[in-house]
Structures are given as C-alpha cells and as structure tokens.
Amino acid sequence: MGLRFTVLASGSGGNATLVECDGFGLLIDAGLGPRQFAARLTAAGTSWASIHALLLTHTHTDHWNDSTLAHLLRRRVPVYCHPGHHRVLETWSHNFASLEAAQLVRDYEAQSDFILTPGLRCKALPVSHDSGVTFGFRLEALPDLFGHSCAVGYVADLGCWDGKLVEALVDVDLLALEFNHDVRMECASGRTAALIARVLGDQGHLSNDQAAALLREVLRRSRPGRLRHLVQLHLSRDCNDPSLAASAARAVLDAHACTGQVHTARQDKVCTTIDLGAPPRKPRAPRRTATRSRAAPEGPTQAWLPGFGDD
Ligand SMILES: [Zn+2]
Ligand SMILES: [Zn+2]
Image (cartoon, rainbow, N blue to C red; front, side, top):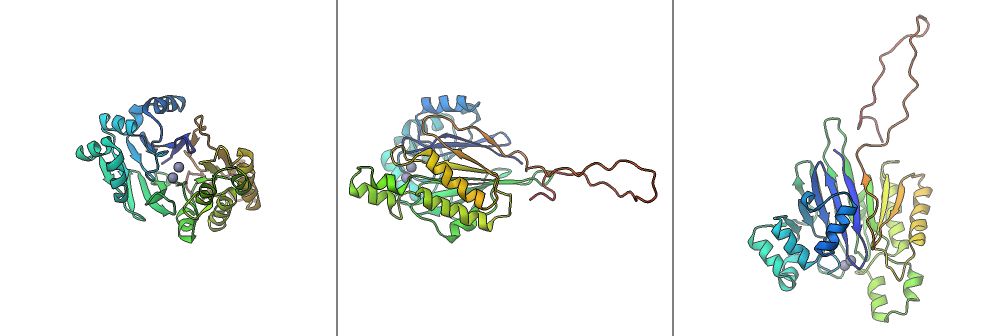
C-alpha cells in the first residue's frame, strides 16, 4: 500500500504535515489556525473533509493550535497523543478537555506499535527536547496484494540522537528530519546567550551537522537504495540557509551513492506532495525474442511484480 506525504508548514511559526494512506488523511501536528490550515490543504489538493486523525509530537505551541482543536472537535476527528501531553493541553486548551469529554483523545505509548487505520501502523519514538515528552514517528503502510509496503520516518524537535533512534529509522522510503540551524549562524545570531544555549543543547534542536550525522548512520544501516526521499524539517529562518541544509544532506547521500531526492520544507508554503506509491522499478531485462534455434533453450520469463526482488 502506498503513502503520500505533504509538509503543509514547517518551522517555529507553525508545523503541520499530511500523510495519506488509501483515503485516510493523517495530520502530524496542527500548529496552524483553521483558516490557514484550510488554505494549505487546498494548496495540497485536499480539504478538511479528507482529514481523519491528528497525531501530536509534543506540546510546544508551534505544533498545535487551540482553534484548530475546536475545529477537529466539530468534525469529530480524533487526536492521538501521549498521556504525558494531557496536563499541558488541559491547562492551556479549553478544547482539549472537550475532545477528551467527547472521547476523541486516543493515547499512544512510547516504542509500541498502534494502528491508525487498517493498513497504517505507527510507532512513537521518544526524542530529547525541552517540552516534556516528545516523539518522532515511524509510519508503515502494510503490504498490499503485491507485497508492496512502504515506511516513513518523521523526526523533528530534538536536541540529540542515539542508536535506538537510528535503529527505528532504518529502511524507510522517506525520512523527514529536522535540520534546524547552522551552528555558526546560531552563534552569530545576536540572540541571548540563554536562547543560543537552549537551541544548541541536548534538549534543543538538531543542527545541520547533527542531522547529517544521523542521516549518515541511518543510511549506513539501511538497505542500499531504500531511502528515496529526504525531507528537511523545522529550518530556522534566522539561523539557517536552505542551501546550506540541502548541501549538508546531499553530501551524505552522495557519499553513500544514494540517489534519493532532497526536499527542504518551508514555513510559508506547502511542499510538493511526495507519492510513495510504488518502489523504484528495476530496469526490465531485454525481452527475449522467440527463436526456433534449438541452440538457445527457452526458459519461462519472470514478470516483475511490485515488491518482489526490489531493493
Ligand atoms: Zn517546533
Ligand atoms: Zn518544540
């Protein structure tokens, strides 16, 4: 089964990503107001009517919006979050309590699989960030009749990474990863020392170099050719340059002979939809022409089927 992946907005001004699986629309985070959301969904060729669930990474306010929670309540769209998110949301959002009362809040647990809709499995991956419990996700579309499945890793808002996170991101078709800042630009930004220390700290955000090192490790442990798309998330407007972030990623991909595409998500507009509908095709073997020669024995030709024999 295929997945479609669209970043609607990314950065400290608001975060939201749409993942579509066989007609099921999943939002990862909802850090935009309902009208802006509607405009971004329209730009992505869809609408609120196609949204069936919200999956929340953490409770920083660039990742959820109270008016949007009210909108989800009106549409009876469930919100998946961690029990550790409840207290903050109950304190700061009237509408979260209403979602709870309407039994529209569903809890996920760290490191355990849960099913969002038949055919779409999710695992919540704990990450280090100064927002209480914070998560990335591994999403897997389960195999279709042809055995074709695909996987997406989504990790943003983290100050450092470890081997356990790498392990959870191995062999994904699409990796969406935070490339927040360039360390030199951050240090020269004129921001307060406390803010710079926060961003650079283990509970802050990943620099381009840290994200590139995580990407390198994921590629080292993944099957060659598996990663088809790298999506760069949560770039700092003031302390990063999209070309710096992209070249940091490209250098790692090239070093691993990985031809995957690099996409750099934006705050101000929707990113191009990435369709993970089918694995890359292997070049077909030249068709054997029928011959009457007995010297050339004919064997059965093996049709290529999606998901079989593909790397
Ligand atoms: Zn954020
Ligand atoms: Zn955050």
